[in-house]
Image 1 (cartoon, rainbow, N blue to C red):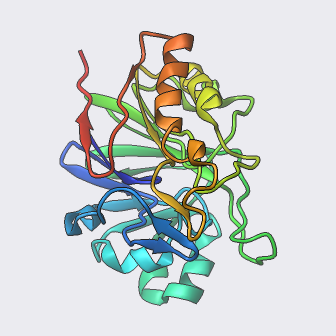
Image 2: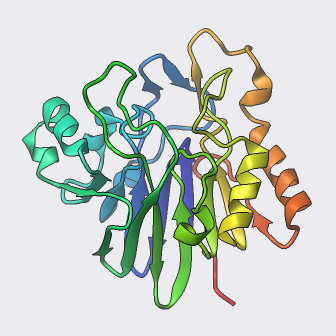
Length: 257
């Protein structure tokens, strides 16, 4: 299994000849947020067989990036998201949506995908009429490593039973601004999440990419350091877990023994 991190929560999961793209943000800006580290994702970043959307927030369901994704890729989205996609991006995109809820399973190419719970606000905006359950995804096959893409989540009862055990965790460890609200994992809580799901490998995501315009020097300790802090916290909890802290655009491979 090959994992490429494009920044924030955008990754390519490549295995069994199948490419999955998580929460694609393929541009330099998200509203008031600016990409502050790493180059723009390569054009090939949008090449995939399916997109996994975790929830409706604009830094995860980024409507501006959808036209940069393979035109025949399925859009796997939380149940209720297709209405928002239809209203803002049009029927050509909403017709590609496969709406799912926790427990739903599907097969894309050589990979089996299961939607799992995420403890996070599922509304598009606090005052929005668009809402859908926040999700994570478990991806696996009979002969390759399994991976948990957490989306945005906090710790919740039942996480271990619903998600684990998995081989690799793509786990959020930070955010995009000078505060981290409820429904998120900080580096220490992210390490505990990895322990609960029994992962042997972990790649921290959702940090060190976007930051509000005009806030470049506000709380810089929340921008880059969460990746290394997660690695240190993981070593303290379970030193057997291999942590790869990637730069945007870098890849790593996980091979079963």
